[in-house]
Amino acid sequence: MNYCLMPLSLKSKSTGVNSMSGIEKIIHDKANLLRQQYNLGNYCGRSIFDIIEKLEIEGNNPLLFRLPFKNAELSGFVGYKNDKFAVYTNTNKTLGYQIFTAAHEIYHIVENGLTVKEQVVLQESTPKEGYAKTESSEILADIFAAELLMPEMEIKREYQRLMNKYGLSIPDESIIVMLQQMYFVEFKAVTKRLREIEADGYNEETESRLNQILFKKNRIIRKSCEIFNHSIGFCFFECTKSTDPRLLYPANIFSFSCFIISSRNPIKVSPALADLLAIIFFAAIFSG
Image 1 (tube, rainbow, N blue to C red):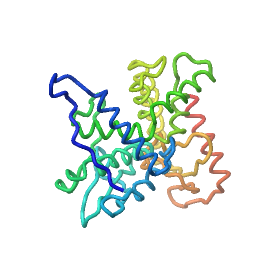
Image 2 (cartoon, one colour):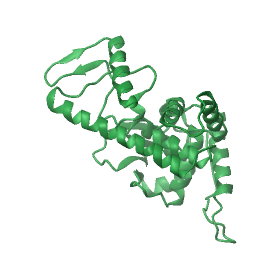
Image 3 (cartoon, rainbow, N blue to C red):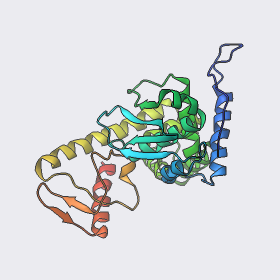
């Protein structure tokens, strides 16, 4: 199954003004077409890695590699060799970040294939805090990924439903976490998406406030891990109920298996105990 787009420009040739609204509509249509043709539904975040390997590009299926990168700034990249595209994601990022990166790379494969072939590797670096992407292909890939993973009309409905259910006029972090679990993306991907679609009661100030809450939680988590690492090692446990912390915290901080690992001897624990530990630990984090 092949896709082809004419190259898109972020500027209108006649006026020189930003014409993103028209381009966004085209990109949204492309994301929705992909969703329909592969029967992905409105919640495809959980299956995004499978989707990559099922795409048919020039008679071949892309390869997917999920690996820890030494370069913390590199979130992923797409390459081309031996007549096949390959997508790489950095497992030192949160699972939610990896999922968005994977959806972003799908755009590059189906729309920027010729460029990828010429460059062999197309890298995706994590933008520094406070800085936005400026390259047109990267902006378009983000628009595509956001619409593929969090369809505008669908997330608007879910956001409003949750706001009404809990009687809120301004969203708090619990609304973001619930949407995050629903669409299986990173916390910041949700806060940014709600601002992009101009959700009710939501603006840039709201986005900044919610992101600051996550920053403080992450700082607590990282400090806790430093303390544990010096004493008994990291705790690794499975979490299958309620909030999935893999979407919030990088794999180099937590790995979710059914083991608690001390500095000397790994201890096998039951899934039920692992779930209980996860629920207690993360309930404490999110209630603080």
